[in-house]
Length: 206
Ligand SMILES: Nc1ncnc2c1ncn2[C@@H]1O[C@H](COP(=O)(O)OP(=O)(O)OP(=O)(O)O)[C@@H](O)[C@H]1O
Image 1 (cartoon, helix red, strand yellow):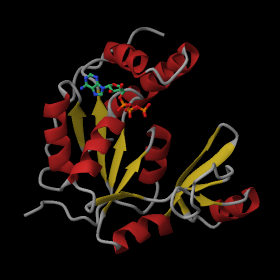
Image 2 (image 1 turned 120 degrees about the horizontal axis):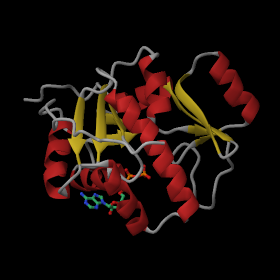
Image 3 (image 1 turned 135 degrees about the horizontal axis):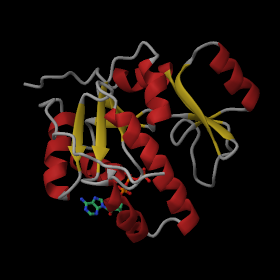
């Protein structure tokens, strides 16, 4: 018996390089019918092969801005000159399918979700230490060194926010990925709400 129903969305956050995508990839591979991301809205143009309504709900800026005014978004943010957002409708669409909705967002998004009517489970994925992020991001090989610097600066903000008491319901420390996945999976499946103890996560001086 699950301790948490599928109707409670799972909000996943954590610094870039913590391993959120790694854990999610495993989860979707093992349970393809149990979980789903909500389809976000964006003002960016579709890329080749991106189906409207599947990858994103592609929206023009005036429509997006009108939706903001009408409080249709749980959270929204500007990124590289485009607007992105999660609508209430998109989350309800996932709920209707019986799957558990997963939101992978940053602390800015978490703050907005907290100000909304949504009552999700907040899970923070973290490396065992801040220092561990650099080798992981370098090892991933997807970013320039400038982009890695920017991600590390953003990671500090994520960690600082996560240290505020009561922000998250549970933590997963992605030390050994097999071990971390077991903890993550049990929370995602709603079988447990117990995560790992939060590590110290000392930050270097600015
Ligand atoms: N437990 C682990 N030990 C060592 N390396 C790991 C571990 N988990 C993931 N990694 C590696 O660390 C890198 C970052 O992981 P991942 O891309 O999943 O992070 P993320 O939290 O999704 O980052 P972003 O927010 O930037 O998308 C990847 O190269 C991944 O293979």
